[in-house]
Image (cartoon, rainbow, N blue to C red; front, side, top):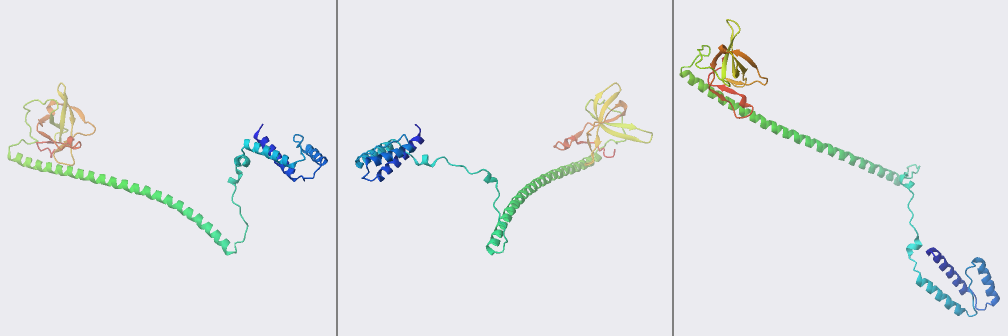
Length: 289
């Protein structure tokens, strides 16, 4: 038997008990029979037997009611039933509008307040975007400042390296002064070589294009063949005097042994940095070549 059916039976019992209380004390047997017949038409399952003594019936009904109520406990949650959700279509509905002529002051003020709230929200959104743009610009400026600092440091390094080159030039001048005091050999007047040059020696090479024009080059011997040397040539440095560097693209060619006029045994590698290690300065002054 389900809980709902029991609740219905309890309700019917309550109704029957109240009807019994309302029956007068002077009812006859025929009247009670008529009431029973009328109750049979309403519900055939329930047929109360009313005795002459109404007190006994009241006591019995009270006992039945107490027994039933003691066995069954009805909580308020059962009587409330299931909660109902709101209509989903209400969420998408727009607010109700009224067609009015805004003539009264409270209506005009309400409209103005709504417009002011919308404008404030828009301004807040614009301010957020503006702040984001400002933050991005600040980051840009900071990166530019860092880049400028790095560039300043690099320029200082280059200036210090150029100062070192100037110091080397001063040393070159002093060495030239000392060489003038000592008997030196003229660059353009060569004698026969005392010994043959070896591999990895720096040499001075003479090219005669014509009887009047002669060109001199400084090179390094890579290997020796029958009557020739394979040489990689150096170039003059534009930054400092009497210094030579290896070009980025190697200038290699083979020359005859007769064209080697001088062995440049005494030389100095300029500087300590990677850029300055390619600079080579010879003891002999070759700036006029």
